[in-house]
Structure formats: C-alpha cells, structure tokens
Length: 282
Image (tube, rainbow, N blue to C red; front, side):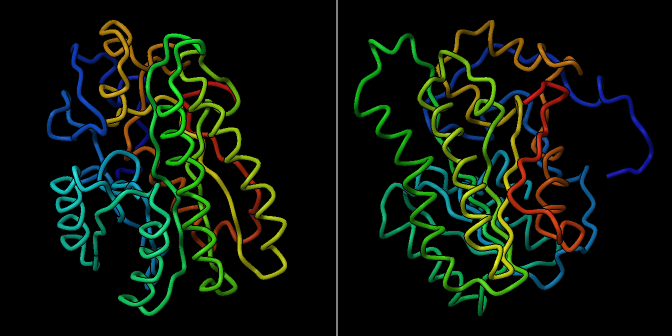
C-alpha cells in the first residue's frame, strides 16, 4: 500500500453493475472483484510471529486481515490460504458452519494444536439478508442471523479465552448498522448492536488478565455479502454512494484497522469500536 496521499473519493469504484448471488456469495462471481489487498496492501510486520484465528476468513473482510469458512466457500478459502503462503506465512483453513457449537469450538482447539497457541482471535463471520418487513420475517431466518452473528461468536470466544495469554487480542467485526440501523436489515442490525455490548463487557472482564477486546465497525464494504443480500439492483449499483466519500469501501481498506488493534500500537486500546465508514457517523 503506497504511503503517497491519494484522493479517497476516487481510489476505488463508486458504481457497481447490477448483479445478485445466492448466500453465502462467492468472490469470483462479483463485478468488480473486491480488492482484498492482494497487490495493494503491503504488510508492516507488526504482527510477526503471532498466531491468529479468523472466522469468516475466506473472502470479503476476513481475507484482508487469514480461517474458518462455510463448506460452500472452499474455493475462496483455498485462495486465501494460497495468498497467505505467498506472503511467506502459514495458513490453515477449516470448513464448517459457525452456528454449530462443536465446529465453532473445534476451530479454536485445532488452531492451538497446529500453531502451538493463539494470540489473535478475529470474530468476523456474519450473515445478513434483506427483510421486507418485521411481519414477514420468518423465525428460521432470524434464527440463522442470530446463531451466526452471536451464538457462533460466543462459542469461539468462550473456547479461546482459556488459551489466551497477556498481550492477546480479540477483535469483533461489528458494523455501522449497530448505530445507524437500516430497517431492511433489522435482525442483522440487532446482532451488531449486541456485539458492541459484548465487546465492552468482555473488555472489562478480560482487562485484568492483560487481554484486549475491541471491534471494527465497517460501513458499506464491497464483499460477497452485498450481491447476496437480496437487495434490488439499484441499491447494489449505488452501494456506498451515500457516504461522505461518495463510494463503498474495499476489504483492503479495513486491513489496517485490524492490524492496528491487534498490534502493540494499540496496547492501551480496549473496549473500543473503530469505525471504517467512509465518513458516515456512528
């Protein structure tokens, strides 16, 4: 990533062609392809030697920061591991559903077994879907959102805490939806607000143990979730245009936030929510 200043308004595309996908969404079907930092992001070495587990790390936000993913996303997962190896680091992928307590717990144990410990836990896996109204919101659908965004998060965090040493870091991917909810994402927004409460409470609980807990709150970011959300095509085409910077963000533009929160540069930061929103306020 170049240190030269660049006008943030035109650094990335500000319009997207009409497109849609089935959940969970695939990277290679998106136009344009999201920038995960494959070529644009240059590592700083600030996390050298640290062992990380990222849920939902096969694509989108997770890939920008190496991974547990849905079985349907195996191609994206393999590509992420390849990119990790290309960067001179070791990556391992775990395919399964974070809603399954056994899987969400086993990925922690498997990470510790393969890497000899765990220093960074990024709880990033999420599910969202367009909702016409509360009246038509089906129980199995909001159950899927809650189990993915909250239950899976708790399962993995609960399993990880006993393995974390002083200096370790937990980072949750919350959302601007926690503070500025959209009616068509009512159940998703509820879970994102709950994640903020989780971060603030857990930061107080784990602070005396020397473990920091923080969240990143992305605004509109161009990931496979977007064409798979079920929005009408005009909303996809104009995605992110309502931000002060006038465009959606790319996954690579979030990477620095996670690196900062996981690194020693943020040694006195805990219980914080770091917005990466293109100027939209929390």
